[in-house]
Amino acid sequence: MREVAISEFKAKCLGLLDEVLKTKKPIRITRFGRPVAEVIPPTKLLSDNWLGSMKNRIEILGDIVSPASEESDWEVLRN
Image (cartoon, rainbow, N blue to C red; front, top):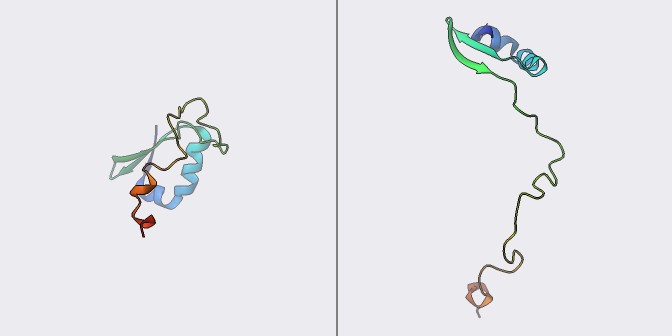
């Protein structure tokens, strides 16, 4: 694993993050020679098409349209 001093990481942060994304290889950030963090590539990039992503994973039980309580319980409707 490549090691980068924290001062170099601070100066080249965006470039190093792009490198991790392209190469899929992690980078270890060190401070005074001791590891303080690791930058790893994402496990899975999120899809731009999230609509319908939960299809066949959710089951709707009961009525999801009607109010949860009776209208007679609503204080705002009382005169």
